[in-house]
Length: 43
Length: 461
Image (cartoon, each protein chain N blue to C red):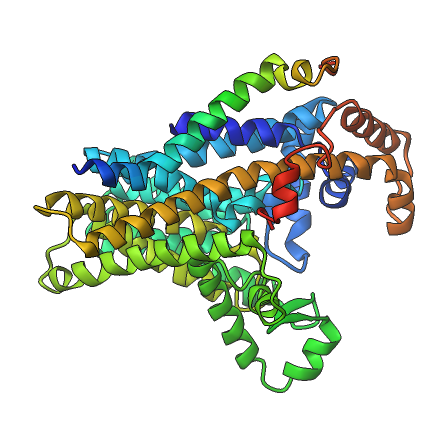
């Protein structure tokens, strides 16, 4: 398998999936609120 | 990868409250209906033959025990998970090329505009998503090793799907096309039985119940560069509606292949003529055009071997996908909108997967990279990046929807009064109060605070 093909076709989708995983974890931990100095909303 | 994608969609979905406009009235009607059976049989005289849809709303209402949000959202989330699991079972990742094509196909599945209608709203069950799940289940059954239970499961799937929504008839298209191209999970006897059930459906629908087909006067529809209201549609097309029907079929088909027109309206072309095309529209059209070109390349390179009756599983999936796409478009003859084409969109992603896997393997077999493969690589990178942007866009739009729906609940009493559907009983008022309190207790992010750059760039139209 040519490495550049893997990069062209697979990398954007993989990156977005990794980004979604990071967003989920950050969101569940309330990190965006902490970063903005806001109290976390009640569950 | 598939699990993360599914969990992310479910997470965004769970943030959206039960809608006022499409969900509240059916829930209030369920409260006034005595049983699931009366919901099923009571809907048989309606303008559409969709008794299973009404029965499901009733069943979830009775099962919810007052936890309406939990019951309807849990069912929606279960359908999303089923969609992803069945998609994965249908494609059979297999090789290293498959692993490269999988994230691409997942972003096509989620990023395509037809997917949005399956997850960002419900009525209060999203039956468009249900039909897509039924079609995927039919394909997985057709691909299976077979057995008497597979035939029964296929028949049950068809009955459930066809009585939920008219596009449920696509289950028959999936199974018959799959059998024709060599997927023999459903036996010949099963296919004949299914065709018999299809005949029964038409006999019950038209001569027995007299349930008609959609008429021109029912709703507005996109046409050309704008929308036509029902009275205008009747004035223009009543004498000879077939041209309008052909336009709808062609629009629906092209909409999945090129991401334009949307809802029958060629908005991007209209914007282009005024030189105000948004970057988001360019991303949508560009990613779809390149992906459709890859699918077209796959079909053109394989059609010679198909003529020699040499057909393998990826070919079969591609043929079934094309059949579903065409049949789905044909069923949209009455009017066109993105949601109706959602099963076609899911099968488009299946075809994109098999075509991309073949292309990746083909490029890998070439001894040296030449300028043609370099151009091809650039185009593929552009398409893959475009689909990644569109996938992020889905979540952006779902967050925006969560904010908008929550705001609707603030004015729910005014809305109910305007629609003349305000509950007359204490139980009905209790349902409205429960759902309102539930919606207002949520804290969706105000879209004006999130992704300001995306809004400024008009990246997610």
